[in-house]
Image (cartoon, rainbow, N blue to C red; front, side, top):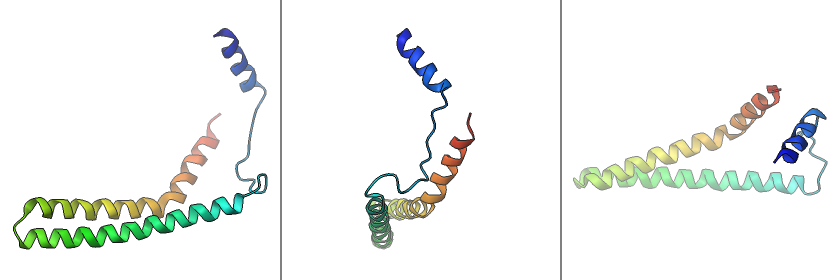
Amino acid sequence: MNSLATRLLVAASTGVSYDPSQTNDLPGTGTLESLADGVGHWALIASVVGVVVGAIMWAFGHFSHNYQQSYNGRRGLIVSGAAALLIGAANGIISFFFGQGQSLH
C-alpha cells in the first residue's frame, strides 16, 4: 500500500498534464465526433416522439377518466421535455464542468 501511495505522490509532483482540446492526436477523432452528433440527433428525435406520445396519452387519459393513463402521459411528456433540455445543454454542461476541473490545483 505504501508503494502505491508513493507512486501516486511522485506522479502528482511531477506535473503530469494533458490537453484534451488537441483534436488531431488520435486517428478517428472526426468519426467519433460525427458519431456523437448522430447519437444526439437520434436522442432528440426520440424526445420529440416522447413528447407527442405523452401528450396523446395525457389527453386520452383525461377525457376517458383514466387517471393512471393521464398521469403516465403527463410524466412521459415532462421526462421527454427534460431529456431534450439536457441534450441541448450537454455541450454547455460538459464545458462548465471541464472549466471547473481546469481551475482545480
